Amino acid sequence: MLDFSCIDPKQWQQHLCAYTQRLEALGNPKLTVLDQFYRQELPRLMQERQPLPYITRDELTKVMEWKLSRGKWRPRLLDFVKSLAEEEVKLASQTSFAAIPNLKDAVTHLSSLKGVGPATASAVLALYAPDIAPFMSDEALVAVFSSVKDYSLKHYLDFAEKLQSKAKELKTGEASKDKSKENQNLNASSLERALYAAALESKFQSAPKSSTLGKREGTFAPNADSKRISDSKNKRTKATRLKSAYAK
Image (cartoon, rainbow, N blue to C red; front, side, top):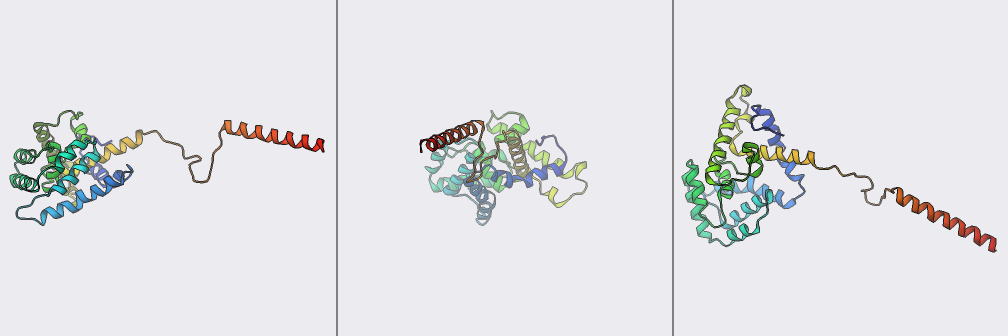
C-alpha cells in the first residue's frame, strides 16, 4: 500500500507505472478500452480544438462510463448525461476550461450540467489541467482523508490542493535530488493514478487465492468422495464378472 505521507518519488513512480497492468488485471475489457480513450485519445482531441477547447456530449458520456466503471455503477447518471444537448455540453466545457486556473469556477461551470457533480467534473478537468485538477476517485480520497463520504466542491478543492502540494514536494524534496525527468512529470493527476494503482494492489493481495488444481481444460482432480465412488463401482463390476463366470 502506498501511504500518502510517502516522500520517496520512486515508490510513487513504481505504482504509477503499474497502473495499466493492474487495471487490466481487473478483467474488465470495456474499462481497459475506456481508459485508453480517456487518457490518450480525448486529451489529444481537446487540444486540437484550441484556442477554445471543449468536449462533446458523446465524449462526456464516455468519461462518465469510465468514471462509473472505475467506481460504483450508477446508470441514472449516465442517462442524465446522454440526455444533455450538444451545444449545452460544448458551452459548459469551454467556459470551464477558460476558468482555469480558478478550479472552483471551473468545477462549478461543468457541474451546471445535469448528472455532472464535482467528481465527474474533476474527471474532465484532469485531462485539460492535470497539474491542477486531479480526478476525485474513491481510492485517492481514502488515501488522503481516510474517507469517501464527502463529494462536495469544498472537499474536492481541499483534495486537489493536497495532491498539488504532494506533487511539488516529490519534485523538490530531499528525496528528489536527482531531479530526474520522471519525477518532474509527477503531477496531481498522475499521483491520483498512483494511489488508485496502489489500492488495486492491496485489493489483489487481500483477495482469497483460489486453487488452480483441476482447472485446466480436459482434466479432473478427484477428491476423496469421487475416489470412494470409483472404488465402489470397480468392486461391483468385479463381483458381476465373477458371478457371470460361475454361471457359465
